[in-house]
Image (cartoon, rainbow, N blue to C red; front, side):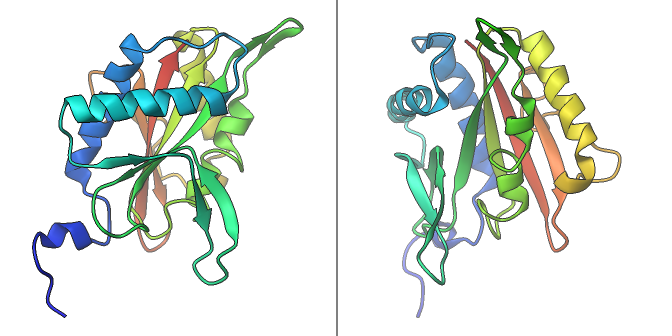
Amino acid sequence: MAIVGDASLWADVFPDRLIPNILELVVKTWQRFQKPRSLDHEVPISRRFREALRRGKDLYELPFTIWPESSETDPDTGKEIGRIDIRFLHGWRESVYFAFECKRLRIPYNTGMRPNTGEYVGASGMMRFITGQYGKGLLSGGMIGYVMDGNLSAAVPAVKKTIDKNREDLRLIFGSSLDFSSMMPRKQAVKETRHDLTKREFTIHHVFLAV
């Protein structure tokens, strides 16, 4: 069957040209976002932030939609395998999207500061993209780190150290690490990691947001 209209809306991967718009939208929206309290959890933070992103997307007339928190299901069984925090959709294929997994970093409990880098990097964080739980068959995804004590200068190196420690499991490209963003190189709080998933290279874009 012939495709009627814009063929890019039926593409197999999310368009790279839109990722800088997404990253810029996240950074700009956070600047005017009413910041959460230092012990708020990531789910309510992400829900409020997602609504702010939607308003910003409409303001700038950006060509994608932002879904509410949505389930990711096994295509064969229909079983839910996870819930994506923030999902951007450009075309008509629900399986082609750009997703952010959101995690808290440097949580200031009364008993002491919890870095939380293991959760950011591990099975419920970055590894969701590496295992194909999220972004299966795609080329990119994203992580948002809510730095709950506001100390970006401590949070980013701590994440980098944990990434380097787990580089084999994360399948990092040889010689790479948590590097400057190729799409927003002047933004110190925007980074990227590149991963060898055998048949494709996958990029995770990291945005660190100070609470």
